Image (cartoon, rainbow, N blue to C red; front, side, top):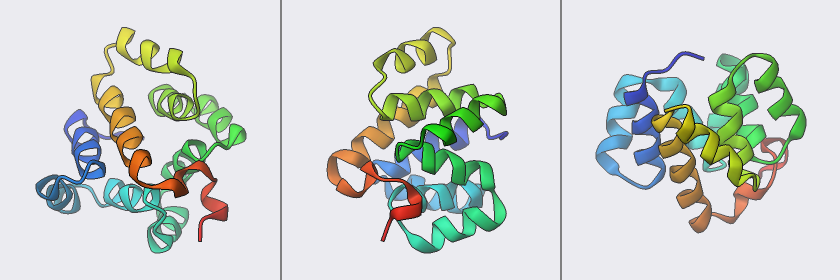
Length: 131
């Protein structure tokens, strides 16, 4: 998955409720806008990802706790995305690794998802089981 640092940072800000970032993300990168919705358990966004960007759907599933989804991200060499998912599932060393690798956009993404999860209890489950 190739997204710019700016796009990933916009996603992080959008997840934290920044309305300007949400609009910019919508205008600039539809797949990440759909990921924002999927991370917020929006069924239409999840379905869009399943049809149009399966790797982002896999990431959403990995954030929801799917170990097989994390393994797939690793197999596809999507290490930043896998580290974010691992951090979301309790591996604090994953955030340390992201920082050491200089992947600041992914650090911000992890923190954005963490902030979202503070306010949304549906994030502890796989996308396959979201309402």
